[in-house]
Image (cartoon, rainbow, N blue to C red; front, side, top):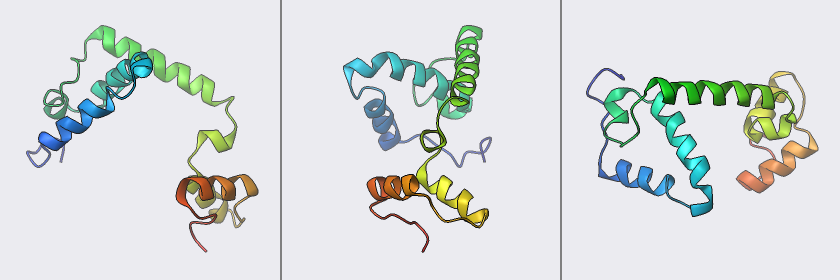
Length: 118
């Protein structure tokens, strides 16, 4: 799929990228870093049309450093901040358990209902 011509960048896609990466001035340092992450993860056929930076050794080094940092930091983050509520609920269902109170409250805030599967 990635190497085919089935995926293409259109006007709406470019407008969406421009919007996402220019939302709030105080977020620019984070958005610039996120732009690097996006550039590394996109194939060249999509990265260039979206206007993402070239993946140079310097860009790759920043990406790799961020991945190591995030992996280390995530070990300290509570489960309810590490995963989206629907994933927590699904994992608990697979284990034969019900959604806990925090998951129910988070589901209610995010999705408008405490349980995604009744």
